[in-house]
Image (cartoon, rainbow, N blue to C red; front, side, top):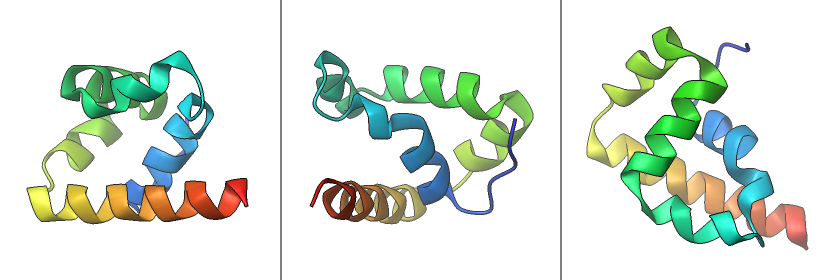
Length: 73
């Protein structure tokens, strides 16, 4: 497993392949996101990311959205 400095990087690496699939709708569900992200980055790394405030998570999802958009175009 890789250590991530940025939550946005972790989200992008973990969920970019969900875009355009049936799993894309699941990205709006906390349970799905937390379970898959924890499996992807490991429990120790996930604990650090999960402790971030809501603003940090919103910014990370904005970064994810931008990167997915640029990746597709």
